[in-house]
Image (cartoon, rainbow, N blue to C red; front, side, top):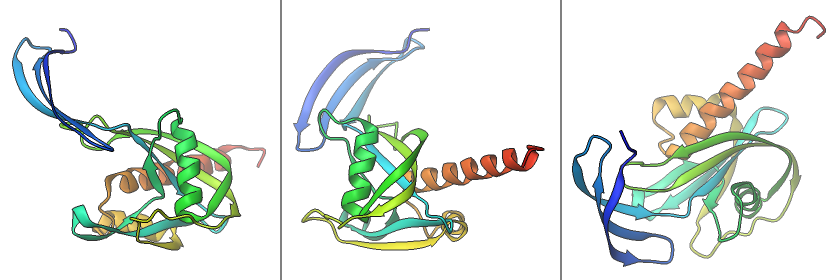
Length: 188
């Protein structure tokens, strides 16, 4: 089976951030379907974790979701910028932090049925404080809370933002794995 092929691509809208098109696609099984596709340049997010295992979460007003959300520092990849550069820039702008240590936590697809957006996730540690530089349309509160509490919030539905859920779960798994490796090392 092939991976699918675009047979027709009709542009419906071109915006500042997204483009919307109606695509006729041949599926791997030979069937055809019309899909509304939102093209997005992608983004990056940082799980900022300090020496006390506290994570930086932003309480941010999001009109499209109907109010306030708990989120990781994150943003859209600018033209010519790598996902890592985006994560570093957004951590500085939104949380007022520069990090010395970065671990790639991998990509995630935010809503693959309609969006092309891929969000790249990073674990950041070893901070230097900076002055946050929030954009005019951003209403953000910066909070630090124990990673264990943030993970509890993922489980109880307090945190509903997908990049934040995936980033926190992956960071927690990364840390558990590192701790297990240290405990199994007889030289420690």
